Image (cartoon, protein in one colour):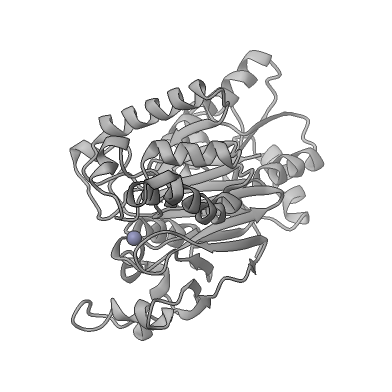
Length: 417
Ligand SMILES: [Zn+2]
C-alpha cells in the first residue's frame, strides 16, 4: 500500500519537481497549492505525512503547522518543512511549533525520504482510555479523560491495540479516517474480560466494515473459552448486533502463556493478581520494551496484611510478584495500574488493584526508565490525579531514582526513541 503524502507548496514548477521525485519512489502524492488549501485537505482526509513550504499565500506555513498540531486527527502526522528560508531562527520556530524536520531547498529527494523514514519508523504509544473500572466522563475528569483502557503501540505501518475499553470507540473512528477506504488489518490484545476492558468492542467501527480483518487475543476465562466470553457481551440480551454479524473478518485467539509474535511485536505474558484470569504484557519492538500491567495488585502488600506473623506473607508475596517484575524489567515504558492512593488502598485490599506507591516500588525494583500511571480511579478527579503524579515524582526523588513519571491521559502520545 503506497504511503500517501500531502504536498503543500505554492510554486507550481517546484511542486511538480517534488511530486515526480516522490512518485518515482513509490509514494502517492496529493497536492495543495497554498496553506489554506493544504490545511483543508489534511482535515478532510488522512495522510501519512505532510511536506510543507513556509512562505505561501492565504496561510503561512507556521499557521498551518500550528493548526495541524491543534487538531486531534493530525496532531501526530509527521510534518516535514521544505523551505528556501535558511534562517536558523525560522527553522527553530518551525520545529518548536511541531514540525518534525526542516529541510532547505534545493530539494534533495534522498534527504526527504530519510526524514520521512526517521519519523515513520519510530515506536509510538498512544492513550485512548486510561480510566479503571467504569467510564467516568464529566467536567472533573476532562483533562485525563473518562474512557476505560485502550492503548495503541505503533511501529512503522503496524499497530497493536491493548484492551478494548470504551476508549476503543474513538480509536475506531480515527482508524476509519486514516484508512480512507482502504482495508484495515488490526491486532488487539485483551488483558481480561471485565467490562471496562471489552466494552468498546461493540462500538469499534472497523469491525463492521467488510474487507477489514481484526484479530483479538486474550486469556481463557475460569470455565469458558475466551471467544465465548467475548461473544457473550453481544448476546441479544445485552447488545443488538451479535459478534458473528459484524462484517469484518474476526479471529479470536486464546493466549495460554506462551510468547507470541505479532508483526514486529514480540509479546510475553504473565498472569496478574486480579479477580478472574488476567494477563499483563511485555511487548518488545525494535529494541524498545513496553510493559502493560493494568488491573493487578501486589501480592507482597496484600499477603503482608493477611499473614503478618514474622513477615511470612510478605516474603511469599515477593516471590509471586517476581512475575510482574520480570515483565517490567528494564522497560522503556511501564504502563502501571495505580488506581488507589496508599491510604485508600487499605480499605480496598484484595480488590485487585495497586496503590500508586506500590506501582512506583515495582517500577524502581524493575529499573523501568519511564512509568505511566494508569487505570485512574473513577472517583478521582483531575486534581487528585495531579496530586498522585506529584507524590510519585517525590517518591522517586527520595529514593534517588531518575525514573520519569507521567500521568497517562487520553490523547497523550509517547514517542520511544
Ligand atoms: Zn478488571
